[in-house]
Image (tube, rainbow, N blue to C red; front, top):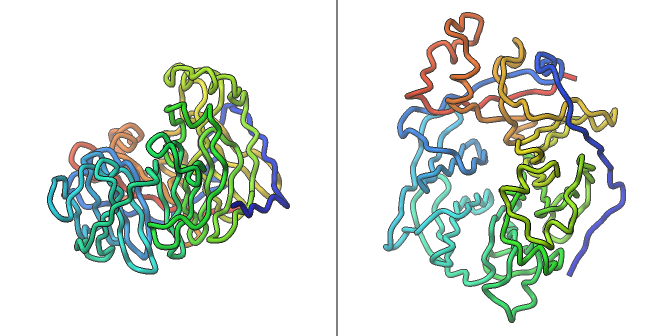
Length: 359
């Protein structure tokens, strides 16, 4: 069952280039920072969402930590175990803004665990034997599952699709993009997170694809077709090339982190063994930058920049890790904002920066 609109699809061509990051301030300007409290000290961030004036972070220790918009911790879900309300791992999580629920998917237990999104209190577990999603998202009370493989349910052909839509998290109401045998049998995943939250809009890009879709409960709209340099030949997927060799190759793949603010579109992909990030002007149909140089001092409008990780209330936002800040700061950062002057990369948590588009 597919209802996909492809009218007005905009084609975007990008090329990797050298870029003077001092020029980034011509397009973006920092409006505010949020420094996350130092306790608990976060491990590597796996996923972060900003919803309903709260910041939800899934880190490497399989925890969900919720902060307010001043960076103070509200609650922590740290529940690895075998008891009620406990999980083997946090494979992915979503926030249902309508029901105020935080839902964790545990692949090993084949279960969804439901918590209160405002205080972290556990209230139920529901078995989800199939599908076995590699990622999930929620918007407008509807759930979306990225379903890359079907080897766990070989006889249920209704689930042989890459994108499944559910209105209650359990029953699949719609499906899109029939599985390709070569892709579904290739276990390498260059795209870590196929869903991208843009305020009240949700984008989706399939594994190994270059078309970006806007998701709605009953339909999909194809928005952008990204023409990447040296696109991955399908023969490499059919031959199941080693994943690390593929990442180091000249081929472009893994389109993700797709965010639009005003007339600017941001996205990431892999090429030549590096994560490449791009910023594109949709009105002028012009590439602003596209390259691997992600961390640097970039001027007074944007003192430190790493990646863009989302859009919230009409602004881009991105996480500045302790490693990024420690690398970018000079020994005496007197020209930097106060939040950086007292920053200790060894003991402090990341800072979230918000950027407005200045063009």
